[in-house]
Amino acid sequence: MSSRRVINLKSTRLLRKHISLAENHVTLALLFALAGLVLWVVLQKDQFDPQTRDISIDQLTAAPDAIQLYHRPLKYWSESGSQSAELTIEPFPASLVDQEWSAKTRVKQFSADTLFEKINGEADKFMQLGFANLYYLVLISADRQEIAIELFDQADMRNSMGIFATHLSGDESMQQQGEVIYFLTSIGAIGRAGQYFFRIAGTEQSERIRNKSEQIVLALGELAGATESTPRAVQIFSDVFEIASGQIAYEGQNVFQYDFVSDVWFGTLDTANNTRLFIHEGGSSAEVEAMFNTLLEEQQYDYQVVEQGENQVVLLHNFLKNYFVMSRKGELLYGVENITELEDIPGIMQRLEGEL
Image (cartoon, rainbow, N blue to C red; front, side, top):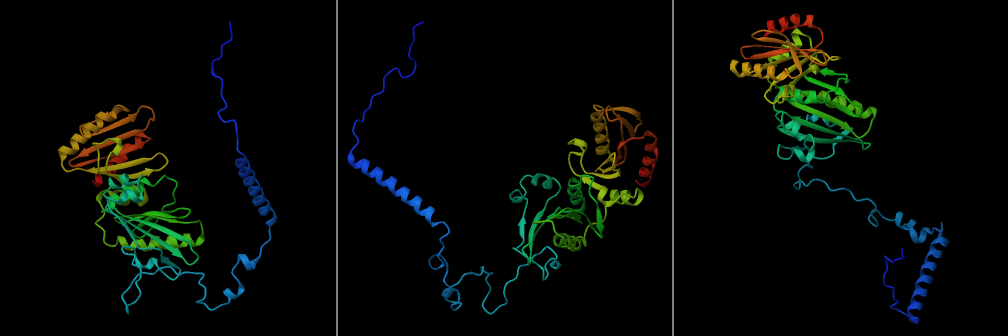
């Protein structure tokens, strides 16, 4: 096969055949200038002359008004003759500010329309549980350590408990001081008090930030002074079954991952197996009956019926081999999930029914 040129079928032509003498001179001049600049930088090395590159001793020792090295930051404006304006930190307790810690800025407030500006990825979670307002405050210490406080007003106690439950992984060491339930983190704390949920985060791990975080937690307990009465489900879980407050949660929507189940209280009996009691108070017996029947129908995709009566059913999970029990009575739907022993069910359900 004869060879054939595929690329550059046409030969190139040199269109410029002459370079002027002036252009050559300019090119050489630029090369010499660059070489001279590089040589000058190399020869300078550490040849530092304070007289030409630093502030002279005479200027440093001159009168204070002669040279100003530090400019004070602007202060908040106030009327002439009045006291200087101070930062208010409401609704945070005034005790958060002391001689060691002060407010770095004014309290920032975010409503339902602006919450995404502060916590874009989490906003929907708070909105689903009655979010009203977020108050944000930063405290700063004398040695420039900072602590940021996020205070969420969730309108009522059940919503704050629901948000708090989403922050629990089961490994936390829960603590309670009065109305405040919380756990400490490496740089702060997370907890709830009444209708408020809070997150505290410092800029570093230190004993000073840890101590201040605990002091903030106790101070936030003042906000829970005028809360609504304790829901009946919470009283039953805590008084009858002796479930700690940190193991009681509220889920407002998509309970059991079904959109037709809402407003359910949970109390964890066994954290290892996640065995939980649940109570739902509906608006009418017809509503509860419809929820009971629909939930039973949906659960049978993953469970098989072990025992079934008119108002109660016991289901066994096809793979996990734990039990799901639910009963209905009037406007109440209640039961227990993730229980491992069948013989434990009657005793638990009798205690729960007795209180309801």
